[in-house]
Amino acid sequence: MIRFRWIVSLFLMPFLWGCSAPLVRPNRIDWNPSLSPKIVQVNGHTIFYTAKGEGSPLFLIHGYGAGMWVWEKQIEVLSQRYLVYTVDVIGHGFSDRPKIPYAPEAYIYFLRDFMDAVGVEKATLIGNSMGGGIAWGTAILFPERVERLILIDCVPPDVLQQVKNESLRTLIAIRDIPFLSYLAISARSKSSMKWALMECVSDVTLITPEVVERQYHLSRIKGTTWVLYSTLKHAEEALKLKDQFPLIRQPALFIWGEKDIVFPPEVGETLHRAITGSRFRLIEKSGHIPMWETPDEVNQAILDFLK
Image (cartoon, rainbow, N blue to C red):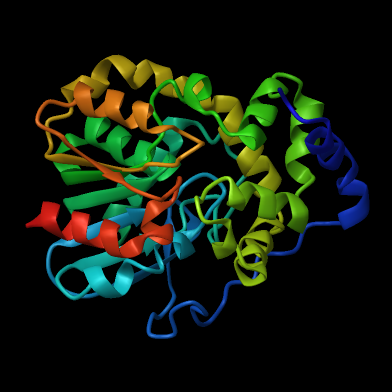
């Protein structure tokens, strides 16, 4: 059942929290001072990213509404052996937010074009949540660009039917009422942001005021409401790739948080069975973003697979 307090907070907060902030890109990465922020033009849009290390390229792709910060606990470890790219996907983080239809294929084509822009022909794609969907979608539409896949609590093709957490179920329930769904997404407050982040972890004490502020700042950048609304509106279009999902032939590893309430482990197990030869690793005491919540276990699983 959808909680009444969630709906009330969604509909009233726009009148309490004011306007969105302009996009101001940082000149340093606060959560990793050793990284230098970079920008590149992709189809006329400015995209924010980082690159560190040497060797075979790995692309780390975040999920819906997030930013590259969710990979803060992977970069140092993986960059000791590989060239690690993290990217604020178009419409997210500190990248531009053009008013385009944010359909699944738009994200997939964006990743291909971003790879072109940074001069990488083929790479291992590591994606979490929606970022995992972008990764497996790229393996379907542009298989020649994908070396291997590591899918961490990734979205399935039938994402709207499989998602289970309360905040997203609420948005899905009203997504066909444009005014209400747009208003609901625009109602981001620090309180609702904290709630959404707590749905992504097993250990809620990890969601500190600093973590909430980090994500809340990104969510208030002008244009974010349209991106999130449009992405949700077009999410069902991923279904047309469902029949092609079993055709993925790249070596694939599924990593899944045992306590994920967004996409429970059975979602990952079903996807794993659909890709011949794929592996499945369940991470205990971890939720929807295990690479951030339990990085030691996830980093070791990634490195073992990449060997």
